[in-house]
Image (tube, rainbow, N blue to C red):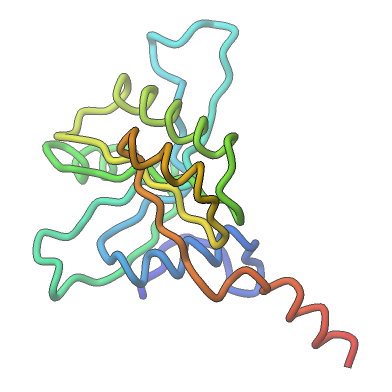
Length: 164
């Protein structure tokens, strides 16, 4: 796993841990904290928003490395070159699948399409706790759910250790 200009492992939030586990499984390059809604077409009263991640799959998936790069303004050209003419994933992360995260990924895809040129976009929600009804909705609207098992109790385990 390659982490470039990302957070220290000791400072990872729960969602960061989910992203790290997803990156190990999915491979390819994930640009974390990608800004959207800041282009010329954006209304003046609109504010900048951030996608949790944009994944660019590796061409040769078998030998692919997993990499997370924090998006910075200095990496803008690198990012645009990486996604040009490529299929990408727009990623939103939450502990539990819920309606707000579905809205975030749907709006994120819409804004991303306006700002960046790529061959196609797949919305992806990474979570540790699913919801059957919402999963059905996501399937009908072509939103992929990537449920990462075994991370639901990270905080609880941590607090139990600190009491010992």
